[in-house]
Length: 101
Image 1 (cartoon, rainbow, N blue to C red):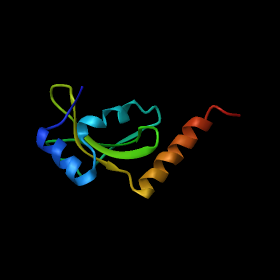
Image 2: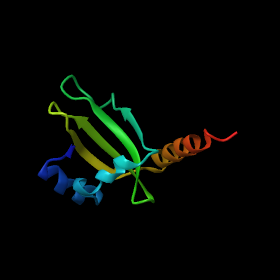
Image 3: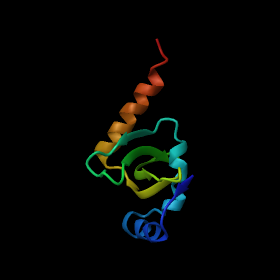
Image 4: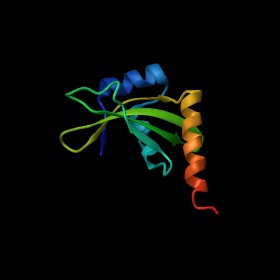
């Protein structure tokens, strides 16, 4: 289950144009990339970055953390930078071409 705080939900809309509550289906993208965010993790909190497609045409950069209760808290979401989009599409091409001879 995905969660977020009300304050972060509103701030994300102000700062990045997306309500966290609206971007949950980015995690349904079969080609998403998820990796550990060592730079922003701490002893108290592991953070993860996800790059995934939203509404079939927009690549998002989403930061999450796993909660003690088993839920995943969404911390922030924004449109991916050009470099991040390139990484996503490179991964997408590799994953869709891996079955071809």
